[in-house]
Image 1 (cartoon, helix red, strand yellow):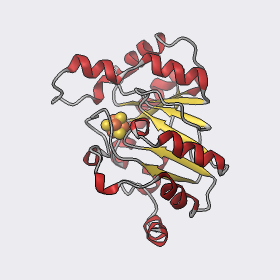
Image 2 (tube, rainbow, N blue to C red):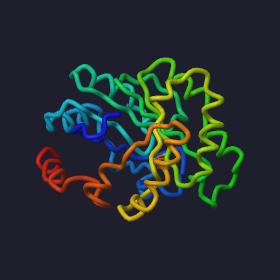
Image 3 (tube, protein in one colour):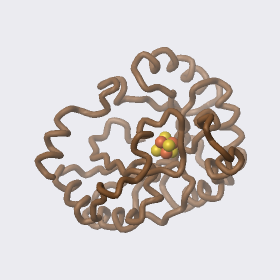
Image 4 (tube, helix red, strand yellow):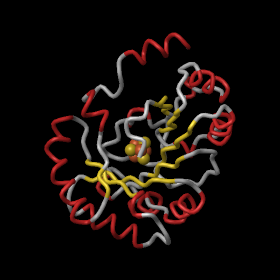
Amino acid sequence: VLTGTVSVIVRLWGCNLKCKWCDERSNLKIDKSHVFSVNKIVEHIKAYDCDHVVITGGEPMIQEGIISLTKKLKETNSHVTVETNATVRKDVFCDLISMSPKLSSSVPSDINNRKAYDKRRINIKVINYYIKNYNYQMKFVVGKESDFNEIDEILSKISNYDRTKILIMPLAASRRQLFSSQKNIARMCIEKNYRYANRLQLQIWGQNKEPKNNDRIFKKIS
Ligand code: SF4
């Protein structure tokens, strides 16, 4: 829902899932040499002079300092969004929880205990908690038409949700993939009354995920 809003994106390493198309898969193991204190992270964020902060991952809710980080950011009046796969409950301080439960199409073939993984992948209790207690949106990444059946099934288990907060985003890692699938996914959204979510960064920058001058700014403050 905040597409197009200029934001500082904080990427935290480590995740409890292993989606096969994850753009951060090489960073999923926490590297102890890249640990920063909450104060240091807040200092970096504030150097951008930007009101909107998006905390993403990896999976932010498995980070020890996530509650303290969000609390400090709220104390500085930032608008805070936390992106999560909605498998872990944490009482963070934020303006928006952006949940993205992962469909079965995300599961790689090398998972040992598929049953246990699936149980961890979709946690209805956690989803319900965030819906009840936060301003939220819930985004599903869709690669094929049959994914819609799975989304319908997940939503049928959720007690009370606002349909306008459910977003469908096409699975794509490049402009070419996006352009080849977006019309079909949009058509399905119209048919099934779901809200379509764009991949604006891919449209504008392609596979380069962010404007180049961000590197320069980061160097200046580090
Ligand atoms: S939940 Fe997100 S960060 Fe974790 S593996 Fe899946 S896509 Fe990557």
